[in-house]
Length: 303
Picture 1 (cartoon, one colour):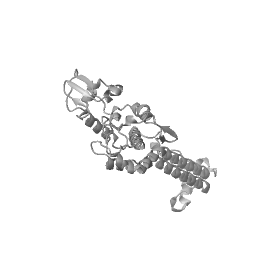
Picture 2: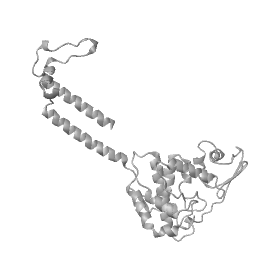
Picture 3: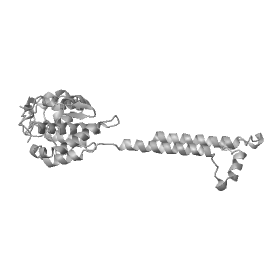
Picture 4: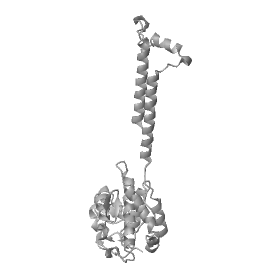
């Protein structure tokens, strides 16, 4: 927008200069041109004063050719401004996925796969939306987080439905390496989204947002991520998971926690050890020298 305004200003200045040049082209006599007076205020040349007096309503007449060029430039600026506005407001609507989650996922993360299977077409429609509205360079980090975590969760649900009924995601051959989905022209799998995209965004809370369709996994949130809420959503999920007694057991001197903290230890210990991270969210203050153990992982379906 600033560049467009600057361009318009330059055009107006050029037009003004052309107008002045044409009015002074009548070779005014040297004595007709007044010198600047005090206080650095310049007096307009008599030829310009005369032109103003002789022009109806005291408006300086701009040459038609210059006016045509100005109107053309203004029209071009209006078109560019319109295009820029369209590009700025372009975004992806996650509301249809949100409706499915609210309908078939409980507040504590139990998923009604049987019900979702009946509305599989709606899920596929959302995955098509994901495919066709892939991220652009202008997207913010929060827009990218919301997009890829929703994509991961929707694709995981679709993977289960493709193999439904099943008792565990581990019953599916190479579940995280299957390439059933596209983002743009690229066929992609869950492993790539998690390890090559989301983990590289340096926010360990993403592990509480993406779901592996298993009981020990952080519960699937029953709403879609959105760019304007993703930070608060991840913060809420981190607090819930760390203090979830079904998946972690925490006391001041001893903690028995999910294997997620072991598998992705590098992500959780960028600013200290694992106890430091847990203490950011734990309702129980953990001692620095507390003993840390990891729980067995339950891969049964989160139904």
